[in-house]
Image (cartoon, rainbow, N blue to C red):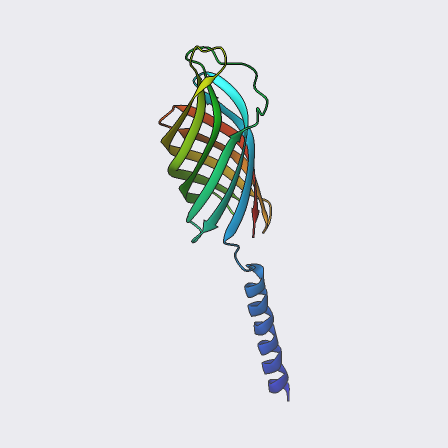
Length: 175
């Protein structure tokens, strides 16, 4: 009878440890939605921007992301001086590679393409020239995972064709 009790206790203890091991790593979340607020510096002109993104994680290292970055200066007055530039928006996609630094911290590098739009001063009093360009995009972010659903961090990126520099604070919701 003691052998049966000991065997039952061992089986119960093993089942408890196995259940705990399985429940500790909850089901992975492959999708994430990101919001970012920061600035873009385009030809020595700095403007506030907002960015939204949707990403899919293939595994812990690789993911793909679609993004839209827009100027938060909704009201602009008058024409620009000749040679002056104003950022309008950028829409594109990028591939992301993640380097885990610890259980919660990670570095994320990105490479992609964006359609970049800006206004450029033409010298005319009543209008600006509108320019659309395709530009490579490179980025680097440091992210901190708060829990299963949320991450916070900072990102620096550049649209290399137009020599812009973007910096912002980022929040991500994983689902």
